[in-house]
Length: 324
Image 1 (cartoon, rainbow, N blue to C red):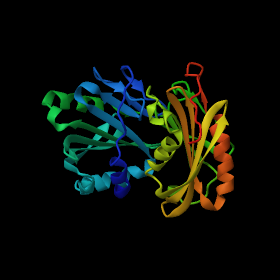
Image 2 (tube, rainbow, N blue to C red):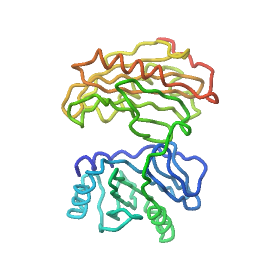
Image 3 (cartoon, one colour):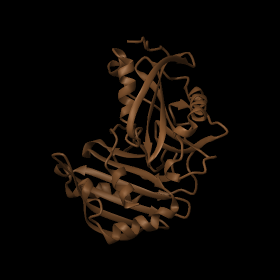
């Protein structure tokens, strides 16, 4: 479990924010958090940002049963994450509201940049939360660190996950096999195969998301190259090899479907990505399933992609995707 945790912490997403709110339940999550002045909920991941302090707070959900082994590992060996450059100077047991918790404080080196780092693990009967916070050490004054600590101390676990559909910038649907699992951010959701009986680490999944940028250039000149680049960034799949890209239309939009093969936890898988373009925004889906049932999962991923759509206030002008 600690090894998985180290891999997860190696990849912090790009940071963007929306206008700040007060105490709130974060989009599509169990997280209830009070935003200190200047903090805002992120639209790129579940968590919050503080632009003035260049600080981020990221929250990941774990199964409830993961709390004990992860907590034990953090308390017994604060150096367990040293391979990722994370050194916890101290860890201690605490409480968050009515729930047990462990907090660690330390630092992380990312290239030439040093960060002050916090890890907070909270356990409830229905879910565990892993919270990571960071701030550039050059900006980490005592006052700013106290502000991050206050934000962390405010985090509690709601009895139910908030409904993400009203907050997402796109719509999505389910199939008989694939059901909504959780929100990955304010602009992405995860669906999983509820009928799958194999190893939990290789459970087929489907992710749908929407870009929040306003810059078309990354795909304007060569959308095929852009599609290949985005799929190759899929760190979860090892030995990823792209099979090809096909131009098509989905819901009236020009679209590209890119397929690749690779392995997930040692099992051969296919990865199917769709990207639908409109002006300077795009909808992206990625489905991952076992190669042994490739035909079945291609059909599922196609049906799910067709159920993803723009909301009425989304951009509407198609972005050409002429073959190169």
